[in-house]
Amino acid sequence: MDKYILAIDAGTTSSRTILFDKNAKPIEIAQYEFNQFFPKEGWVEHDPLEIWNTQLKAITDVIKKSKIDPKNIDSIGITNQRETTVIWNKDTGQPVYNAIVWQDRRTASFCDKLKEENKSELIQNKTGLVIDAYFSGTKIKWILDSNSEIRQQADKGQLIFGTIDTWLIWNLSKGKYHLTDPSNASRTLLYNIKDDMWDDELLEIFDVPRNILPKVVDSSAISAYIDEEILGIKIPIAGIAGDQQAALFGQLCINPGDIKNTYGTGCFCMMNTGKSAVKSKNKMLSTIAWRINGELTYALEGSVFVAGALIQWLRDKLSIIKDAPEVENLANTVKDNGGVTFIPALSGLAAPYWDPYAQGTIFGITRGTENGHIARAALESIALRTRDIIIEMQKDANINFTNLKVDGGASNNNLLMQIQSDLLQTNVTRPKTTETTALGAAFLAGLASGFWKNISDLNDLWIEDRSFNPNLKNDSTQIINLWETRINKLLKVNE
Ligand code: ADP
Image (tube, rainbow, N blue to C red; front, side):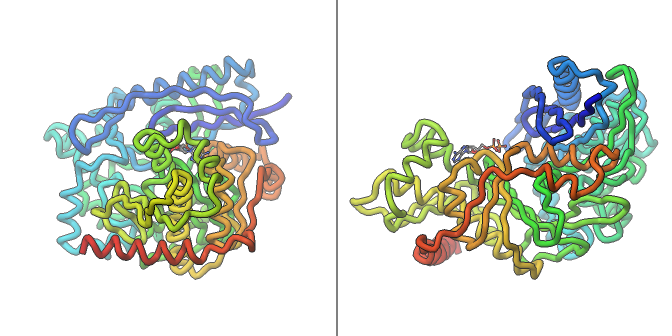
């Protein structure tokens, strides 16, 4: 009988479930969006029960639609939006507050206070992270401090905390398992990524009682079972990883120097740094990629806030294209950028510039400038921001890479991928399966259960769609020189 892996992909805007067969082919998918709540400026919340209910519906739908007997589900892999924080009562299963989402900025002033108290160095050394409202630690503290009763219940051991992986596993097992994996734990600001454990000094700084924390298990291991009542049979949960780390694994970036970039609304770039937690000099994040057989693999992470979002801006505000893919045709109507440089600082500039006040700017407009030049410069800017990050990552890790693996909506743009290859002077490879996040969770689960024997089994399943090589005819020197001069000009304006 054919067996399958069920991948749960708990995203920021929707709950998805994908069934993969032995050839790692997605054979069925179900997806439900859930509500986003914005109770105040800068606040973003989800209803944890809605996340659970939509996820459960996506799971049962996939099984119904595929007509597969749940007996033939080998195991389950979970991947999730990271950092989003839930605290709930362990007897009733009721959350004490909405989930505070990774995008939520409400704890920014507490983060400023920690920075003023010179805690940055200590926290970076232990967690690999910068102090920021993005991570779970300050969100946990905020929920506990929001009401004295909540704090008391936590101290009495009545409450437990989890990121979305933990919350779903707890619900899938009807409260039997309270656990997470190191890729998720390493995004809380409470986890020591070198000692591979929750850290008492950090718990004190963030005022978080140890008894609310989940147990940390391997990312690829049979660590829990879903309750029989859910699908009529106990099924092992064998893979857990945060979304970006799962995508890194799904792209089979399993050796030091392997690197992937996801071109979505923003870009998420991750480089495998092997057994060493690299301390970044450029405020990149150092994080745990996964733990397999008790052994940690680390990664460096850098992001570009505005990538596909820039293409949306061309579509919705400048109205020079009707849909995102059209940008490629428009950019191909001209042979080069015509001297135009687009600095895509629509929400400031992140690594390695870190200027939150920088604003989007188009340099070099003349009477000869056409829409095509703007479109081309916009695509170049996405590839240039990615190059900025990759260059710094290589310096931080002291590793040179040879191939960039890509995924995400905008990676379907062939011109963008060619520009990326020319700018980096390296190969860029796009896989056939663009569901790399869910695939990573499935790979982690299938390796633990024996569904796939080993990594070389997986190598045969990673199928290339297209590879882009540097084109010697495309000289990128002008693009890069203009970029460097002009971005420095822009940064000076804010000094
Ligand atoms: P997310 O997961 O962040 O929602 P996706 O991976 O679904 O993002 O990609 C969607 C983004 O990619 C959108 O911002 C869209 O503008 C951009 N995009 C999609 N197709 C193309 C394309 N062919 N060229 C350029 N950008 C594209």
